[in-house]
Length: 457
Image (tube, rainbow, N blue to C red; front, top):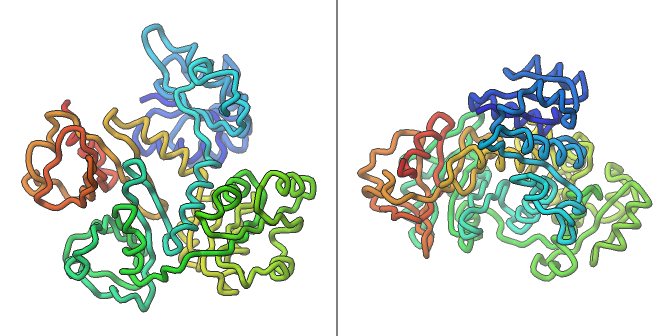
C-alpha cells in the first residue's frame, strides 16, 4: 500500500514507523527541515519538506497513487484540507482512505456545519479524548497498568504487574485456573523484562511479571484481587496540568460523573487565565492556580493525602518527576502522559503505575483501517511485542470449521475469548460460529495468518 503521512511530529513519526514496519510504501510530509532530516536518518521512508496543503507537495508525494493519507499535524485546518485534497486527487473509480487528527469541536461537535462526508474524511481521530478516557478507566481500576475494551465494553484486557509478595508468584497458569475455576479469565501474555511471552498452561508466574489478562468486564475486580492487588477504590485525585487531556479527565471524574467515579478532584494549572476558565466550566473540580511541577505547592494542597496523581502537562519530563515524587509520598496510583517511545517502557520499572500516550490512539485507528473488513478493533500496548485483535468470523471462514483444538493454530496465535450473545473464555473445545467475535493475541509475524482464519476469502 502507498501511504502518505502529513506531519512528522511525535504522532506522525510513530505512524510512519509503524506503516514502514508493515512493509508499506510511505512518504512523510512536513514543513520543518529538522523533522524531515530526522525521518530520513531513522526510517526507511521517503520524506518531503513542504506543506500538506500544497498541491505541488502532494503531487511530489504521488498523491494520485496513494491508498491512504494520515494527516496528523498540530493544525486542524491543515489536516482537514490535506484530507480533502487527497480525496479530490484520487484517480477516477479509485479511493484514498483519509484519516485526520482534529482537536477542535468546531469541526466535529454536534453543532458543526460540515459532516465527515462533506469534508471528504473517512475517520476523524481525537487523541486527547481517547487518552482521557483511558486515564479515567485506569483510575476506576486501581490495580491496572493498562486497560483495553473489546466487544462494546463487555470484555477487557487488563495489565497488572505482580508484586514480590503476590500469592500467585511461582504458580503455573494451569494451577491458577484450577484454583479459581469460578472466574472466567485467560492470561494472554506476559511481559518479562524485554521479552513478550505467549504462555501455555505450564508457564509459571514470577515477581515483577507484567501480566495481561482477558476477562469479562464484571470480573476484572476479582481478577485483580486474585493476583494480590488491593481492591480499595480511589477517592481523591490530583490532576497536574489543565491541558485538553487534563480537562477531559477532570470532567470524566467530576460533575455528573462524580458519584459513579466516587472521587474528589483537584486540578493544578499554571496559566491564571486558563485556570479561571477551567474553574468556570468544570463542575465539582477545585482548580488551583500554580506550577504543577512545584512540589512544595502540591504538598501544601494535599499531595500526600491524595490517592491518585495524574500528570498530563506538555512537559513529559516534569510528568515523570512529579509522579515519582508522588510515589515517594506513598500516593497509591500515578499516571503520566508520555509521548517519547523510550520513556514508556521504563516508566513502570522506575516506579510509575501507568503511562498513557496520545500516539497510541492514532496508531490503533490506522492499524484498524489497514486490516480487513472483519477486523473490528486492533490494540497495541507499549512494551508488548504483539497485537490484540477483535475479529468477526465470516461465514465459511476456517475458524468456524472445527473446534479450536482441531485447528492446529500456530505458535504466536492465542484465541482468548469469544463473544456472541454471551462472552465465553475460549478453550480447546470452543467452536466459533459465523458472526461471533473473538479476541486474538498475535505476534507481529502471525497477524496475516490470523486475518486469514476469520475470512471466507
